[in-house]
Figure (tube, one colour):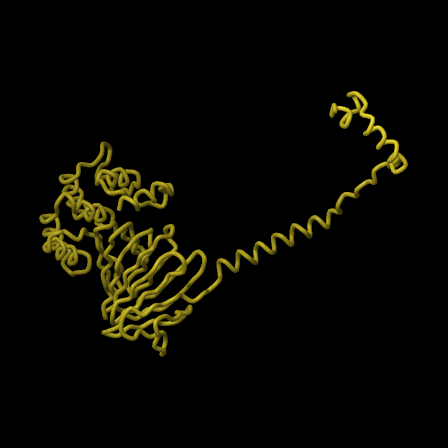
Length: 327
């Protein structure tokens, strides 16, 4: 059979099809198709408003949900509030987790990582939302392993705020409220008021209550260099400390000297500039005057000469991810 007759009646007539057409012809519709009225404008507006309201409610729930975090006992008898946890427990928002000298625990940070809590530690779950996971470490030590995008996990301490940039790090707070941050992989930003430190893998940073974070240094720096840096950051004789600091600095310690360029002033800044230039010559056009004027571009160009995969807010996501993998 030629199928053209079925579509536009141009092919040869099929007798069987012709017979069916005659039999069904009384049922043929002879009128015009009914018009479908256009939806009223106010119906469309209310439908759109309902969709937007539903989206806002869902988004608000995702951003403001405050679920408790899972806690697992690793050793001893850690407590949430006044209650000892068994094999597992829950840490609610606002709740305190405490370990004694023989206790350790592990916290699951939502779906983005985990935190191991050392003995003699006390911390509180401050916030648990879609875009912010925040702890407050009052004393003791933790080790955080975070596999989420940067700036989703925060740890408050009496001295500074630690902002995760996708990394593994340990954080210790002593009875005075000071402490030390040590980074194993990735980057961590320590900040308080107008003081800020970006700490890369393999480096540490001291912090003091009332003073904030100090200056980052590599863990393999000499003891004399580290002692001089601590005196310069937190002591009462910065000029004498700077003498020892510059004398002990290696090429690898350019990380520390670069961080000192901006907070230093006058003759101190000139000495830091000269020593850093001797270790890592600045790019063409980067001068002491540019550093004194706090020209960000000059500082960034010299920073890139240090050979460190720097994390910056302006870096594209794929470069930040690559830096994390390399670390």
